[in-house]
Image 1 (cartoon, rainbow, N blue to C red):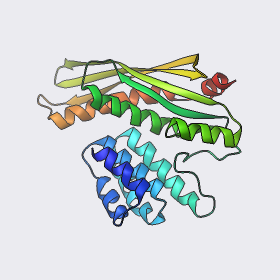
Image 2: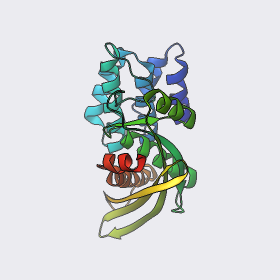
Image 3: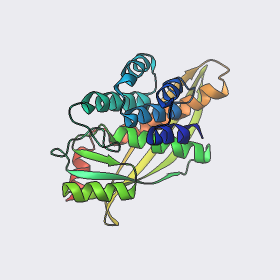
Length: 238
């Protein structure tokens, strides 16, 4: 609910939007912080820059840091060259393909819909830093962007294939694995996969700390899968 509320505020821009989203940057859940940072970028108000930059110093989640950097870049560029809210990183001249977020699944059996949302946000945030790739919010937006830029659309479907935990002494290890498929015109063009492990120390870890370890493991697996994936995407678009 907090994620959806933050994104809605960024689109609707009600009175007090800036202050509400700045407060959400300190939310205890990384997906909410990422949504707040995304919404601040969509809001387009450069007055949000100080709050985003302060949060960046403190932020430990890689996916949230990636979103904050994307929003900061978007706001800094906005005065001279405004970017569409759903394409924060690539100029029209650089774009080789439009990436549409497809179906995201969680087959791990852990945390169901909640972890699926973590996968979705991590995939969107990681994809936004890929060079030559314009990330669209939805299918309609991807088709508009592709038509305007005369480039193909690649759909990214994802799955959390595994989330396991193990105790090693006083350390809790959380291991996540993800897989993405790349399709164009409903034809499979390739797959990418990645995995990551996070570590928590202490004999007792709070429920919130436990969730953060799981979230960061999924985010790290997404980063592993999409790191340097520009060429794969461009080849898939041919």
